[in-house]
Image (cartoon, rainbow, N blue to C red; front, side, top):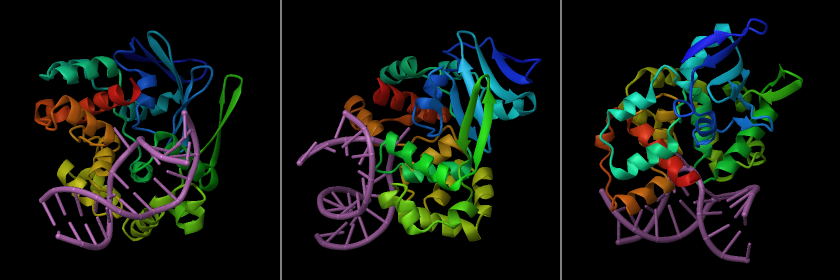
Amino acid sequence: MRYTIDNNTNNIIINDITRDEMNLDKTLNCGQAFRWNKDSKNNWIGVVDKEIWILRQYENYIVTNIKSSNKEKLIYYFNLDMNYTDEISKLDLDAYAKKAYEYGKGIHILRQDLFETMITFLMSQFNSMHNIRLIVEKLSARYGNKIVEKWFDDEIVRYTFPTLEQLSKCSYDDFMNCSIGLRTNYLISMINYLKGNYDILNYLKNCNYNSAISALKKFDGIGDKVANCIALFSLHHVEAFPIDVHIKRIINEEYSGNIDISRYGQYAGIIQQYMYYYRAFK
DNA sequence: TGCCAGGCTTCAC
DNA sequence: GTGAAGCATGGC
């Protein structure tokens, strides 16, 4: 893998990259992120922080609208500096994990914004992927900022995920009108807490896995599963192993109700994501 | 119409 | 500590 810059646009091109190494379709559609959409021209369009990011994957390269000054951020967000194939090959996988890996390889674990991930996964409980996307888009379109990006002949319009300040102005009814439903009180509670304790985000970013899980679970509405999702998909504790309904079924049906995740070592979360993708998208 | 979705809190035992 | 009930919403 190497990076070149388009001389005309100053956009980054990722070269010499196969879909087995990094697969945009799988990575952006596997349930770890809710703000990426693929258009009819195979462009993956998402909002990262305050910017619209556009990526299109070809057989051996990926073109982007991401400027050269954002190269480190691109690598960081998509975890492009890790060779997944090499790392996974060091693990002693059982038969089901091997099958899941073969099906899911190419998935990278993203490093998403913490505030956004805490809220999107708070919304995820007892909800479907479709509804989570719906909620996040409604929140962003109504309370975030409009941003526009030119991409060849298209004008792409998106909305930033609302800030704490923007969400602070919302009422109970505002949130109910975004289809947040039974999670509304949890969201209000989180916003009220963060208003006086925003530093906890920095604490979460700097502490270890166990400390992060216990701090996250103090929020009303965050239990084991959501805490592990936040730890995995934002804080990049790739040992985190979220157990949702799909993983529960896998454990019951494939592991007789008892899985030993210690054999997946520091990459248990990545194996979990292969399993989730294999089960939920096969 | 009934069931399900990347669960959590509360309450009874 | 464990288990069941209840919780809003949209797609199928």
